[in-house]
Image 1 (spheres, helix red, strand yellow):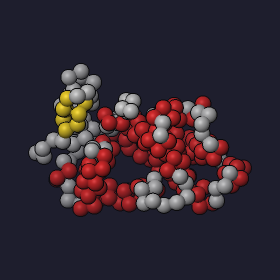
Image 2 (cartoon, rainbow, N blue to C red; image 1 turned 180 degrees about the vertical axis):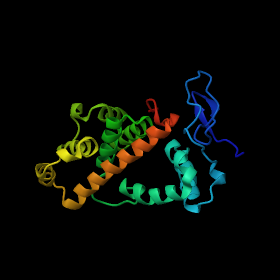
Image 3 (spheres, rainbow, N blue to C red; image 1 turned 90 degrees about the horizontal axis):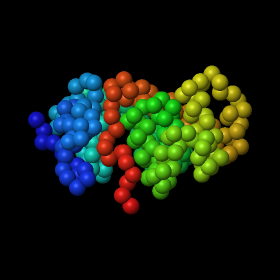
Length: 223
């Protein structure tokens, strides 16, 4: 059994629930006791070098391994192929085009629409970090229509994302004309659609497996 990593919670050390599907319950009984309805292998049990490298890098840079990716590591080769598509789509390869904030607006709005606990919390947290305002991510996650700070381009992308997720048959040429008028070319429009559609798929996986958010993604960060 791999030695459990530890995270600091309110000044004390608790075993991290990101390293096992059978993590101990916190003293208050509110921490989820599992990160998937299915088996979750330990990181040191994984054989795919790319997937192991992904978790090693995540642990080094973020101090955790994310529950959603850990849940999918049961089929590690599939996770490797998924990461090769998903991570660049979210801008981890430093590509231009849509800004990091725009990508996270799309991911946050879709995750909120689908009520995926893990993805909703994760992307709202990331959006807050990108925007430099934690509350911004939370408010976009609840209802982007009420967030006055969104740019017109972000608002149009959020509206498109909701349509892609909830009712793609409702999309009309006029929706694309609106985006073009705001400076988005066809490549970027397709990228926005792809992010919305793929995040919707990740939401469904997370919901089906009942993956909880990492504790580090919840709560107001220290300032």
